[in-house]
Length: 322
Image (tube, rainbow, N blue to C red; front, side, top):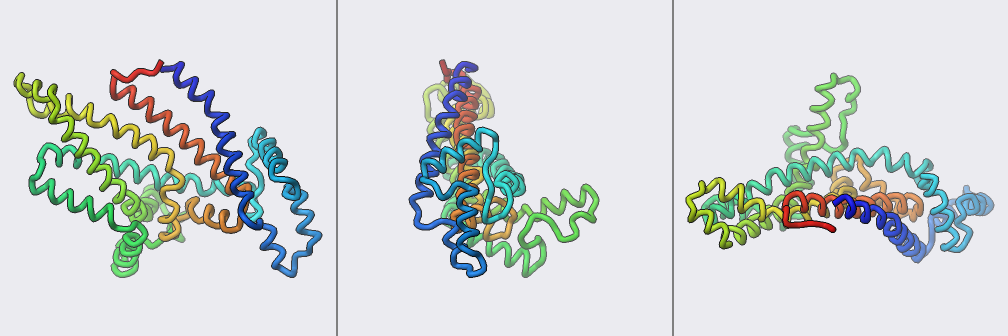
């Protein structure tokens, strides 16, 4: 296993380089650049624009620009965000923790709820509970997340005042005690976390139910029951262990989408994450900010797949990596 992990880590660098090169060139294919918007401002002279282009090497061919960006990356410099007027690392760092907090809390709730419900529905197939959970999952998969967020913001926030509307902290957050600060952040996380969890919970519950039903029909489960083993041991010791293996791979892919999964929801809820920053970066063609976010997303993708492989080997002893 250690040799396999080492090989995957060695592949990480050339893979990220290839991803960054392709992304950089695709951005260059888009018409115009950030300086095109500056030229529309009569208060900014052409000389100032040319000086800025030379300062950030954007007056050179795309391949040369990429080499300069790569050289800065070797020194752990992600570049300077012209639209935000501060270093890319600072822009991403101020919003990254907020996005990770929302995404991780959503993943925890989704998996802690979806797995038990999926197992219950498989064990009690076609029961009233199974039908109710199936109906709820279909509604959850078909309901647009942004629409549900608007409904919750209106009814739970504006209409009844049960939860705060938008943001991550209250205006007087720094006047609270430590426990009150935690409670304030938790209340602000309720709406975006619930909305982000519902879609994933509905699909994961259906997948877990199908996996469990397939495993329960296998010969070794029938043999275990014929030997007189307790039903709880048959389900949770034998069937669940094999039914959950395909879910591990899905978990790895969810790790890789930590930054991108909540972008639209952050914009709708006014949540101070990377979603709004990335949207503005793409619209304004802020090259360095887009590349910095892409690099972190690519790193999470590779690491997430590696984590999925390791967890699969731990969950299933039959899986081995040579």
